[in-house]
Length: 147
Length: 147
Picture 1 (cartoon, chains in turn red, brown):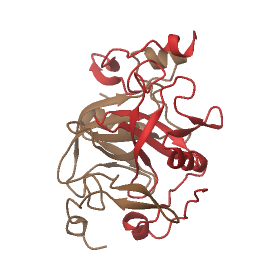
Picture 2 (cartoon, chains in turn green, cyan):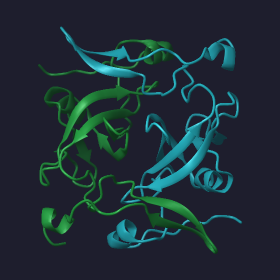
Picture 3 (cartoon, rainbow over the protein chains, first blue to last red):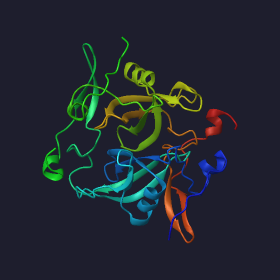
Picture 4 (cartoon, rainbow over the protein chains, first blue to last red):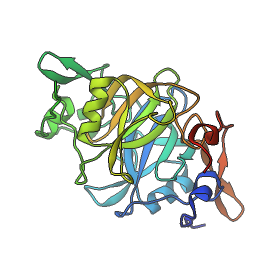
């Protein structure tokens, strides 16, 4: 079965209705947030085109669209760190996707952390800076090869 | 103090460094996800321009940029449902913001739910549909007025 997505109707239908009518941007993409289904930890934010969203629904594994490579990719296809999708949520105006996932392997982030959001903003004397909030979960060079 | 954001250096600096160098898109905006700091529930996704991110850092309350109204807004300025920011996280390539917040009031979503992600995708005989996952937390008409 090929999944086709409906066009958006009026605001009430979009917000209160049962019709899946995702709003892809002018570039054909919709933002997609992945969070751990158990802990709630937000793991990453990426983009989906319509085929990536359809593939995610059909296969139960997270697929995204790479803006730099201009191609769909299956999360974990090179690292093995795939995301098994427990639930796909849409927000009120259906212009953002939320995946509740089981993250396979030590982490979602190619830098080596469990989550891509491994740094927080801190105030310093002369302004603002970033501070790492935890340890790396794996060695990315061992997984992806030397840079 | 006015907060100024650095320009991005090379990928290693952006990913491993301590310099806050958010990557705003060609439209001057960066996506911002808000999640409940205690439960982890993803509440909403919106956009920030540089002044909104600076105001969020300076005030400790979430500020976003409305693409439809073309103006910065303080979350909760009309509903009272403000977001007190516990942490501001940046992702690996610093092109997404994550706010870990204390959501004041019954919910983040203008439709009346705690989270904007109140519907999940389900398979039905003839394709896909949306299913509401929980009850409304408040009556939006009582908060925002009749539509």
